[in-house]
Image (cartoon, rainbow, N blue to C red; front, side, top):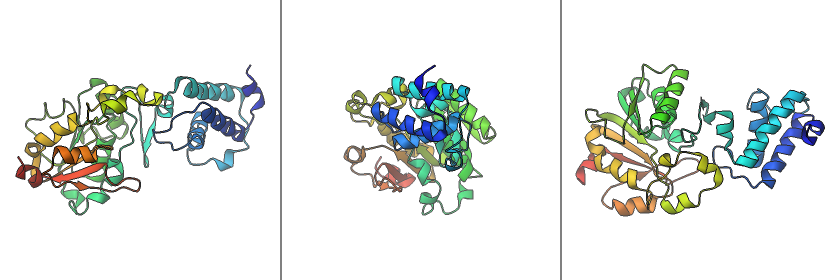
Length: 299
């Protein structure tokens, strides 16, 4: 029996211990948690099957021996293997939406989730008027599910090159009862979408540069490289998306693409395109919007 399972009795004790272990281990927090404290609280509450937003009432509750053993194992895996918390718990959150995740998909963390539908209202004043939408590079299916939720009349396609990712997406679509609203398609970007056009296309494609890939913290190396690596300048997929998007958009259609820290490179690669950069609470230049006519004008 370890000293931790003997000496740490309450939820308060285990949160403190977790924060100390995470700080001592110099963990990296970039998958939905901002700090060692936030991740400690999340993991403790999750392991104990407690509400994720209700710490205070349980701080002085004592853990059973079995709970201590299970929680210690979870904490030690996070520290020793650098596995992101979402992969340990098999869940990730975008706002109020919970999704199943594992190492076949990226952990959801897209700025696009913060933008739909409110930030698009100047271009889409009536959500009910969106009848077709595409989530390109869907991964876990999280953004496709948000599209279907916010645009209730839309038939949503969700495409990804990875069969493994689409298996995870299928589970999430089923969890939300949206199998009749969301069509999962295996496609290398546009390759299997030849007969389709859309009112709204969103994409959070691979956009990490080769240099950044070589410098990623250990936590990110648990994620599929195929979903991260964007080539030397991070724009391999983005170029293909922009080059061919016009033929897949309806005349009033919109293209929304997340490109990380690559705004300067994107504008340099497409100097004639009138990008509109959309702001979130924490970011001003990672997501661009283009209209169908913008793309047609420069072809």
